[in-house]
Length: 98
Image 1 (cartoon, rainbow, N blue to C red):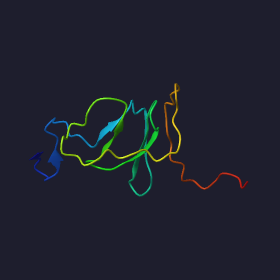
Image 2 (cartoon, one colour):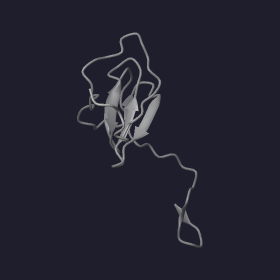
Image 3 (cartoon, helix red, strand yellow):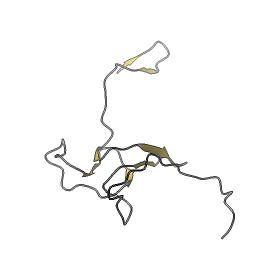
Image 4 (cartoon, helix red, strand yellow):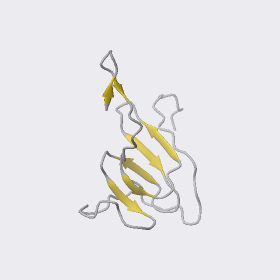
């Protein structure tokens, strides 16, 4: 990556893969600690993403043939023929008590 005169990195226009897998990730959000979450369609639909992770997918093989295993979603159910298009990590603490 090139740097400018102020020593700040300047993009070279290259694409960098953050993680591999899932299926149609539509919703993306980060929490205050910088954890990245996505909502995907059809398969287990909520993933806590980590840099370099290889996640379960609807089809196809991971790009990395040496990956030990595919990481699962973080929920106990699937959408089955449905799809959701969003996720938001709410951290405001303003929901009313039960």
